Length: 155
Image (cartoon, rainbow, N blue to C red; front, side, top):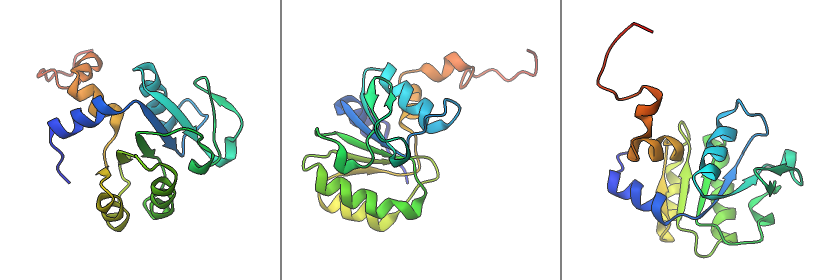
């Protein structure tokens, strides 16, 4: 899928609260550092993982499911296998009447679930990472040595 920079920028600009489904408590897991990065960028991150329900992460209580989130969220970021997506999207559509975005992480796609969300007016992004897109759109990837335009094997 091709998403314009304008579309991705608009999503990241309008989003305030993100439920991260499948977040890990392990700091070396991508779901952990993506959620941490988003929280450091000012997003209100609501961690969702049934294995860690009730524990604290990034100053928030981990919820067991989206149904346990007691506030509206703007975006649901899915860190689960593609086959797990449909019930997550179903729950998100029921729990959050004004949900704006379903974001599926790199490697996560589900056309039918995406179509169902889009039919309800929810923007869907598949097979992308909000952390990477935020960094790319804000020029932060250069800080890590990416997209510098310089090719070198020297350290």
